[in-house]
Amino acid sequence: QVQLKETGPDLVQLTQTLSITCTVSGFSLTTYNVHWVRQPPGKGLEWMGAMWNGGGTDYNSAFKSRLSISRDTSKSQVFLKMNSLQTDDTAKYFCARRVNYYSGFDYWGQGVMVTVSS
Amino acid sequence: NIVMTQSPKSMSISVGDRVTMNCKASQNVYNNIAWYQQKPGQSPKLLIYYASNRYNGVPDRFTGSGYGTDFTLTINSVQAEDAAFYYCQRIYNSPFTFGSGTKLEIK
Image 1 (cartoon, one colour):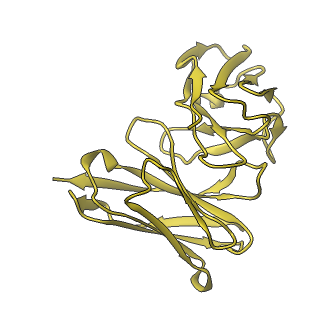
Image 2: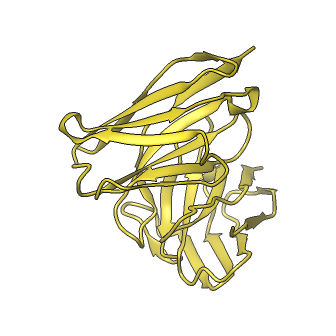
Image 3: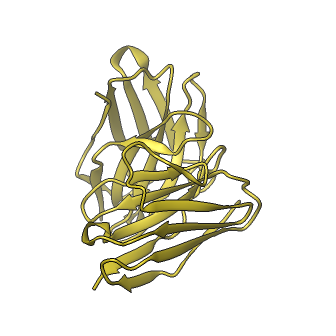
């Protein structure tokens, strides 16, 4: 069955780099897009960026200068790296799958809660 | 960038009532809207895609409608388990902006 699972640190120091891995199963990264979404505590959802099935990427301009998304198709993994972390980057980070242009995000990981500490 | 504005921010409804919540896009997004339900501590769940298509397994009391800039999610005969946050999202192309959400409480 389709699954996505995020793994990453609970705590990151101010100004450091965040690295999170999304490991997927039940589908191929060369067929489906994987997106990253975050949610600060008590707040709404924010789209961060995407890894397209063809290998390209797309980013929310709010993060463009410090966000990088990559993948390893042989390991069915998508990676998020974001540098220069600030306290307002404290959030739960989700990866999610999108099927095609007309669909929403149909499967989500459980998310990983990351706290940026000073 | 397109801004998605949801209203109301919160609502309190009795079981069995009908509820309507709104999502307004700052530009024409055609049919390209999805709706999600998120309960505390859980990941969002896809309810509706392409404005009015119910996702697999979603109860038929959930209905999406609208086109262009104005969209609505209606829940007929609300159940206790429908207490959650509801988010709209622009789909089709980037940026895949979410609305700020509507909190549905059950009296």
